[in-house]
Structures are given as structure tokens and as C-alpha cells.
Image 1 (tube, helix red, strand yellow):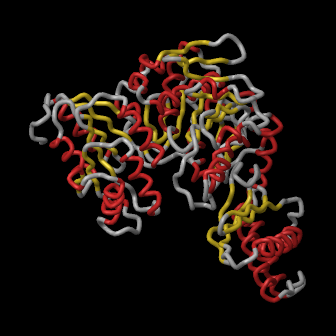
Image 2 (image 1 turned 45 degrees about the vertical axis):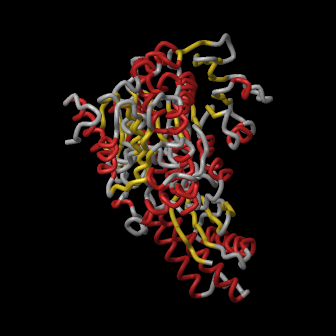
Image 3 (image 1 turned 120 degrees about the vertical axis):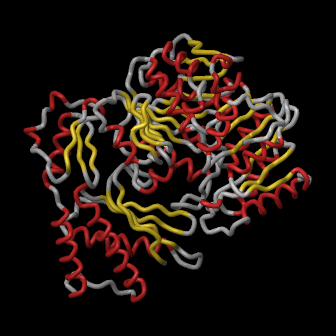
Length: 571
């Protein structure tokens, strides 16, 4: 057995709701995880008692090919906690090999305990713990990381460097308060939903803060660009004193590596669960992935969950919190649920029911993001957003206005089903980076009239071969007339140049795509140019963009300004 990863857990996580440290250990098929867990528990408890942490707990999680071993710890000693966990594992492995664990008074173990006590003492920050206790007493949020600690959220927050913390008596507690928080997770649709919710909040006169894979935004303004869908991005939003409602994209990776940014939120929403990034961080199947997404339920007072998702729906029924269910098919809601709140589609109407008379919020043709209802996945995202907005107390009018305006400009939801009508052709620019997203896009495309459908297809190198073949199958499900296989040279991630386009081509050919329907491009931008050059009036171009989305959008906007027509050269 070998250690794959050792890290801190700073917030509620897949194991439990406590901060602490976790070891991910690889277990070979011939090895006995139960025996290893028992040995680790014995040694971890002995070390915790020896360093004065007898009040801390232990937790384990077994998964295919490994185990996670966690111990809780004070927030001012999480680095020391990782050292304790690693030391416990080393002693456990030694005892398994010798069948005789060393006694606590052995010289080696005494030296280890002395070192660990010293590390705890060096990391200790009593003012941090005092501030944490005071925040709990005053009923407000407390956030901490390596650099800062804060009390309250958004407009009600106050933050200080961790080395310059005031005594609780000097904190102006009458100025400290929390703001409403929403956590948005799921496999696909997260970024679209947080952006739509921010538009709704702006329509209600609020100044929203959001974090996502695109960056941190306050109101309509980009504050910091980058992937901020983890707890670090959440803290940036929650400590911004101009924010009065927080909408946090909460990605799988951040929850597994560190945990949630907050211990409490008004509402959390799960869009869906589909195969993506399986095999990472001990998550190997959809059931485990759903459990990961449901980590948000450790903080949320209520949930908004996809009733049409066959993995999520039964798990949602087991939650103790109130659940509002969103669905494209109202009958799916009549499944013995104890909670009656729902957001569903009736004909072309988006309907909200919260235990009273149903309210029609908008019709699909009023929401540009749904492409008149053809983009069924965005209809689902709109329904989910309505459920979250209702939990946050936004007005029905704000929801409707948000739906009417969101998606009219590409920059509002860059790379997520951006629509162009250019030179007699229709163009959709989308992210569609996994089979579930690709199937949704192909379903959308099938609902749009087109003479021919041309598709860009590629993938980063960190997906395994079955995932790549599944992506090809999802793309071929829409029977595009031509597929341009693009190279993502900057995202090979261990693959060889040309390997992924060739694998996709082989799978498409096996599925029935004629060789003449496939072509290749050495970059994403080159693939987009090739598609535009091939296009003729009446065609639909499906430009799947990952790394060069900005350049592709700039190209399209430039052609639009030139009044470019299909069949003309692409400058």
C-alpha cells in the first residue's frame, strides 16, 4: 500500500463536516483494506492522545482501489494534522509488516511525538480560535485560510490577516452579518446557472457576487479571471464588502480536495450527475459522483434537485432538508415525495409551485438561452435557477426579467450555447466537454432546421479511452454531416500529438461515419476557420470550443462586422 495524497480538509467534505487532514492510500487487489484501516485507527488514536488531541475524531472511506483515512483537527493546526496522519500511517504499515506495534515510550515514537507537538505549537494561533468561537457565539459565519480570517459575509464581513487578528472584544459585532448564499454544483450547467442567477439578482436590485470556472464577478464586473469554482473563489466573493448575495459555483474537485467554502448556505442546487473525471480522487462511478455533489447538503438549509436525474432523484428523497424538484416532465414529480415544492415545464411555461398556487414565471420563447425551447438542457437550467432564486427570496418579476435578458449577448455566457446568425448560416458556440453535454447539444441541434450540420470535435488528454469513445458516440448520435477533428496541442496531458483526433476518428468510423465526412485541423481556431470555409447558406455550425473560445468568438464578431457571407473567403 502506498500513499497517493496527503492534504488538509478546510470545510465540509465527502467524509464528514469537520476540518482536518486526509490520506488517500492505494490498495492493491491482493491487499486487505480492513486490516490496514484497523492498524491506522489504532496508531492514529494513540498519536492523537499523545499530542493532546484526544477530543479529535477519525473517519474512513473505502473505494475501488483505495481508502481515505481522515482525522479532525483544530483549524489553526491543519498542516500539523497532515503530519500526524502520515506518522500514524507509517507506524501502522510498520506494525502490519512486523505484527508488533512500537510502544509509545520507544525512542523512535517518542521522537515522533515530540516533533509533532513542536509542529502543533509552531502553527498554533490562539487568536484565530478565539475569533472562531466569538463568531459562533454571535451567530455569524467564520472563514479562514492561510492568509486571512473573516467574520460575517459580503457586506457584513470584516477580514484581517491571520497574523494580525483583533481580540473578539474589539470586533464591531453590530456591523457584522451574513448575506444569502447559494451553492451550485452538478456535472453540466453550473456556470450557466450561476450567471443566470446573477442576472436575476441584478434585476431585483441586488449586487450579486459569483465565482465560477470563468472567474470572480461582482455585479456585472469581472474582478479576477481564472478558474475560481473552488473554496478559494468562494471566499473571495464572501469577503467582498460590496456583495449582498453570493452565488458560488462549487465544483467536484474543490469539494474533494478541500471541502466547501462555507458551513451554512440558504440553498444548494444540483444540476445533474453524468460521467466526467471518473477515476479521480477516489470517485469511480455515478453513485460516488452523486455523493460528491451531495456534499453541498452538509451546508444547505434547503436543496433544489433535478427530478429527472435517475441517480440524484432517489438520493434526494433521503435528505432531511426541504427539497424543491425541477423537471421537464411534471409527472416525474409525483413519485411519493414528501416535499411539494417544484419548478417544472407545462407546455412552454416555466412554472414555480411553492406550496401555494402555481406561478408561471416565463415562457420558453421569452428566454433566449433556451433557443425557443429547443435547448432542453437550458430549459432545465432555467427551471433550476428559478428554484434557487425563490429560495433566495428574489421576486417573480426579477426571475422573468433575468430570463428575458440573459443570453442575448455572447459575453454574458461566453462559450455556453452562444448563437450567431451570420452570412446565411446558423452558428452555436458551446463548451460540450463530456458525453452528457455533447448529447444535450446534439438534441438541441436536432430541433433546429438546417441544410447540413457541421461539428468541431476534440478533447483534452486527461480522459481515458472509453470516455473519448463515449464522446465520439454522443457526437455521432446527432448524425452530423461533417466532423472536423481538432488538435488541442496545449492540453495533450501525457498523450501524443495526433493521438486523440485519431482515436475519435476510429470510433466515429466504427459507428458508421463515412471517411469523407471527417477532416482534421491542427488547432481549435484552424478548425473553426475550416468550418466557416466549408459552410454554405442554410448550414448549422456546431463549434465546440475549449482553449480558443475567445479567439473564435472574436473571429465571428469580426466577420459579423464585415457583413461576411457564406462562401466568401475567411480573412
